Length: 280
Image 1 (tube, one colour):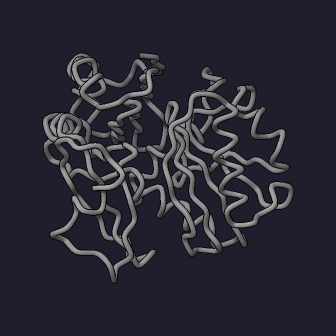
Image 2: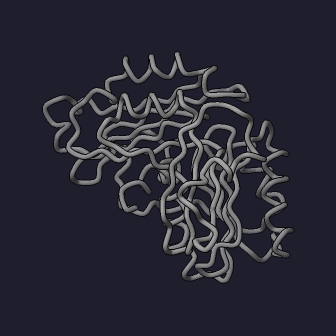
């Protein structure tokens, strides 16, 4: 596992009740931040699972250990916003959605196994977001965040991007978590496309990004690309995409955040998906 750690020495059990916790328990990574009442980032922790996982079971033991050992998961925060992240998620139009048939939406796209099926209504898109969370991942989520319902990161991400899209003819957005890319395309505020891809190399990521442009006949020289997540301007991923897309932007978080000046490599777009959890 690859890890990133930032912690303010003032964050402790005494002042944690005045702070807000944001966490994402993903099948590709585990990340969390703590923000105080003034919007200052007090902690940021992230662990990425390098291997291309066949199931969450491969890392369940290690993830459980992190959740037990790391201080940020044991502090008594005043508010908690959490979600799961994994590729087994789909959007179903309202007219076709049936509460009692959640497993059927995945029978042709995921391997047989034990899953916990959940859904969330997205009236903005006249659809339901349905996800199939592996039992091990769902079990950990419920155990360590007992007061939270299982919800997928895609819901707050889609709501956030819809607000961005109001001022653009087309919006292409990519959120990166470890070696997983969530790609969204909107026309104004109308959702055209949402999918999740696993990739191994920068070339793979470029292929999926350009595929989104091509599918909707958008020109990479005219339509900007917005990036969020674990990507920096001097990274191979960014350089590869920038070679083919004329304007590449980094996402602006939905809430104001004060980043520590001593951490030069950390930018606000890196934690955009975590901050999306608050306003959704």
